Image (cartoon, rainbow, N blue to C red; front, side):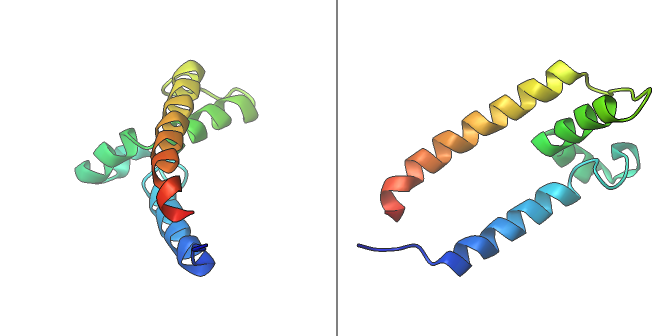
Length: 93
């Protein structure tokens, strides 16, 4: 049985998560990002998660996109990743 290389998988995971984190509004507002990064950020599910969390956790917090949009983005992102990983699973195992 062929096993995935754990370190290689972890390295790819760290690279992808770092890119998602950098291209979200977790560090700084989208409005001050370059145009190309703003476009990526608007398609990034983490942007909507951070927005919803700020609204819910900060007293008097305001959501830019709305909490329901944030939940919908997370559900859609999860569904897409489940489909991708389910398609890749038979090749890895």
